[in-house]
Image (tube, rainbow, N blue to C red; front, top):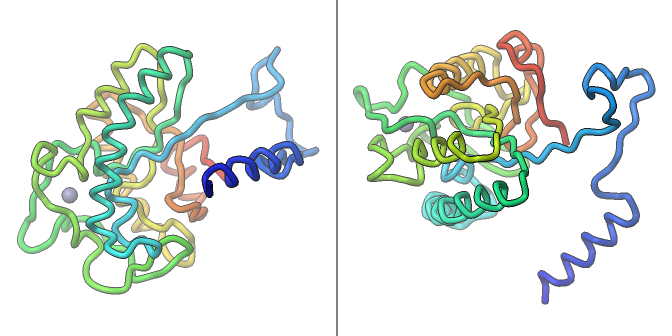
Length: 232
Ligand SMILES: [Zn+2]
């Protein structure tokens, strides 16, 4: 019932043109971005993050356990979505968390990914990170043992699909990118790590999606070679 009401409200919002909102920029030459004869571009993007997005979620009671359950669901759904994309010739921009490219990882000493600078404790609309190390939940195993934390198999499935998809960057470990939370050096470390792992699949990362809509560090992203980012 709740779902039905939500679906109806969503349709009403669509008819009232409240969602999605069309923003008009009079001073922007759209031809710079949209080749003739097209007048518009529709981009379908999907955050591809498995358990990494939910580790510190404020709306979950046992974030780590539920993160693993949500990752399981994503693992069931992604192959089905890819099949539908092939059936209807739909391309998706997969905003992929860099950690998913890994076949596995291990603890060097006592920390996971010790060469990466850590994001300080912080809180935003979606998550609260107020104790321990940012990578505490990283199982530091491999994708067969902990399929919620790595996804080389799914990335290959996306790359091998009949329909061409884009792999975009969603940081290495789903960090908050706002300028007031994330010093640029932290983001640079995360992105270099993403570029390094993506390159092994022959992927050049050109589009960026900020985790949890934490828009920020835009100059840093441009300097790292990104040409596009997703806004709200
Ligand atoms: Zn790891």
